[in-house]
Length: 307
Ligand SMILES: Cc1cc2nc3c(=O)[nH]c(=O)nc-3n(C[C@H](O)[C@H](O)[C@H](O)COP(=O)(O)OP(=O)(O)OC[C@H]3O[C@@H](n4cnc5c(N)ncnc54)[C@H](O)[C@@H]3O)c2cc1C
Image 1 (cartoon, rainbow, N blue to C red):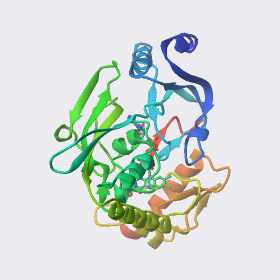
Image 2 (cartoon, protein in one colour):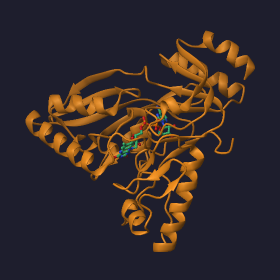
Image 3 (tube, rainbow, N blue to C red):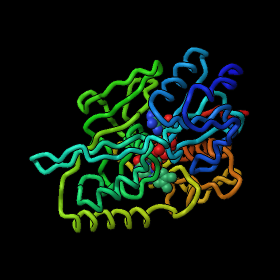
Image 4 (cartoon, helix red, strand yellow):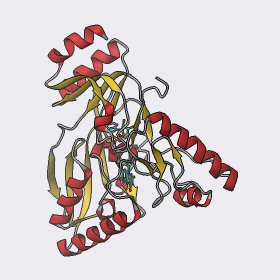
């Protein structure tokens, strides 16, 4: 790691930070300092980071908006890579079937794509309005809402592996499932192509606004969270199970089960990753006791939980 720390500035075009707190990059506002944080500005820089890390056996993790991430409280070893500079968004073509095909970089905020679709009357992602984070994260997580998922509109995804090799996976080679894209291990999403249906802009605008209002009404506004903590078990809503098990308002340190939507944990100020894990375990045990159902985490964990 010592070698890489001194050499990394020569390997990449883009910002490098040392001992940068992950708490500044996660919506939950938890996370200790990461040894190296890199913001490569092009695929060659990304390749240089990945291959150097692979050679020295240094862990690498990718983050987007950090809106589905729980980062450990202690020092986080390795390199955190943000693709926020991969922000191209282009209309590739319009098809005879009245579709619009868009190329979108991994660092584009999902909200920007939703907004562009709304303005241009491109239909298909209205229900994703209000989901924070970037395109890379949305594809990796197969983000979804109100029965729609990002997979519904994906045509293909460009990925880079840990050796810096780029490949394009067409939709039929992708194995999307609930809140997962199931990509080959170590894949870094560079971009995705989406297909949207051309529609009346006023209609798309109306539907987008309606979904956004529905979402705002259902989730705790402006609070520090990582969205839904648990996946919905088949046939159940995790939030309802947690509520029925009597967990609303429960706390571990400064982490609280939201009184508004029980599947959200809210950082009330100084909560730690440890608080989050403790609360998760308590809630899981309560739900298991109440319903016999085992909840599974939706949030991704990076870094050690114990310092
Ligand atoms: C208030 C709030 C509401 C939310 N509502 C919803 C909702 O309705 N539906 C929903 O599905 N989610 C929701 N979420 C969760 C979250 O916003 C989504 O999962 C989002 O798509 C994550 O994107 P991100 O860029 O923040 O990913 P991050 O949190 O940064 O990362 C998530 C995972 O993706 C991986 N990843 C990120 N970028 C890349 C890349 N380029 N290549 C490879 N791997 C990558 C990371 O390593 C990590 O494992 C909500 C979150 C919040 C805070």
